[in-house]
View: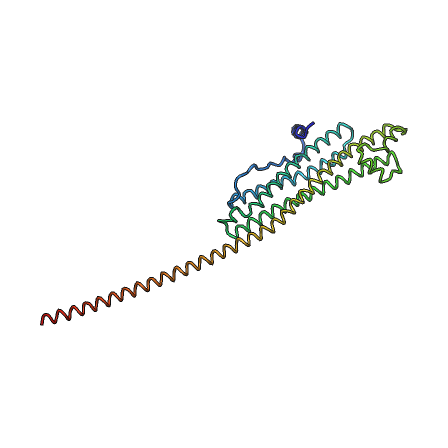
Length: 317
């Protein structure tokens, strides 16, 4: 069965369970299963402040839903460990695998969106059109989103570590049922081989209680498979932590870039102020020169008028 088929079956069982519960009168409503995380398909530009802040809010909402699903994974892990019988165990394992696949898809999508958000803190052209305060606000929001995601991942990691510890304890208990003096090496081989190794081969051929030995053997097989999947999940979580750590380094570079952009803005502002001052001084100088020219022309006109008046008076006399 493919991952998509298992996920579809898991959701179908959830829907059927919810319908059955609604048909039975109860004093209070049963708690509903957390809904799958709905991820935004927004792919537009994050250059403007409204678009950036809207995407940051949408990611935080998705992270909250992701955290809710972590609690659901914890419940499914417990159910898978406590399941009795082949049918019950298979059903619990299928539900857990489908939920884990959904968590893997969600965490990958969130990782991509958070990286994109961090990359958009300073838009192209070094934040042209954005003030230093706006770029710092964008960086603060990106930092908050990343921190929330890291917290959710840490909780998920804790849940998986706890489930792995319990699963290993169950394997150890089953191994010691058929071999009371089993060493830690025997237990490790039983887990690594996935079928119990020589411990169960000997028990199945020589045990006087074949049914009990067979039951222990089946559980060790199931738990060994669960442990391998848990190790895969923990490895994926470790990679996500690495990605988030790289974002911290990128954040430091972004802060330096914001400072550089702010300094460039200050330099441009200072140069602009100098140009304005120079322009004002030129304008004042031109005004002074115009007034000087005006008074010179006025004096010339007065002198000419006086000379003409004198000449006219002489001719008249």
